[in-house]
Length: 328
Image 1 (cartoon, rainbow, N blue to C red):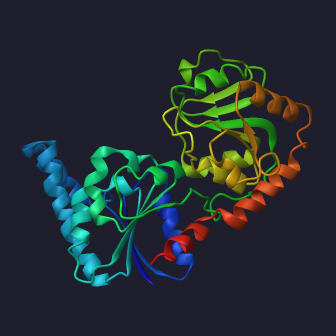
Image 2: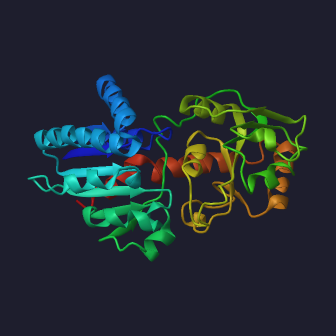
Image 3: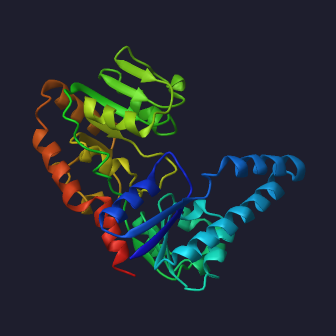
């Protein structure tokens, strides 16, 4: 099958994981990132914004990108156009796709609540199927998409894998400090934690047991970090829907690392809690888990092994892309 992936370059590498999976399944795949501009186009975009203002300058440069994209898609003549980060793509790109002569199917995948945002309704006529990582948004289908299907995040097991490093009995967290996270980590001062992310200088209560790096890290450093420590805490942001599950839910077990995840509605349908991952519903439950780890680092080795196998057997990008392609 010929598949054209359109996306916006992003630090999550979601689109790259999708492309890797589709190629591994033997499909002919082309990938276009709308913000991965040539030096000439980037220069022109800057000039246009300086002369015409940001809004008009962006509009004209987008029209130039759309023209190039239209030409490439016509030449490739895909059977399917697939768009991760569904609403990172402006509506004018979507409308262009429906003008293509061979009328390929247009599928998109959303994972940040965008399917529930009123301003994205203008995209609905152009998407044949919207895959959504949050099951509750699928049930609601607030914007009346033609068809919505629940498709959770997953792991790229070619990237997120066991590097067989010697692990320290420390617990790791990667992410920015925000509402909800301050309350959690300010109560974990007795434990050896490695924390990386922005705004942690604002943490209400710090500890000599904390090793804090005050900046974002790239994907390669994150993967190595997962492999350096015994466990990873996952605490979703306060703005996330209660049934939202981020990529970390799948990527941590994929590296053969113990996942300590905040409870999310429906997580028990994807993992066997206490046998494949550990889940906490409040600070006291998280502290209890960390105390057990501190006393006996090997206590949860069977959980780590089972979680790792579950991801490899059910929660990879290859699994997800097979499901997507079953609807073509």
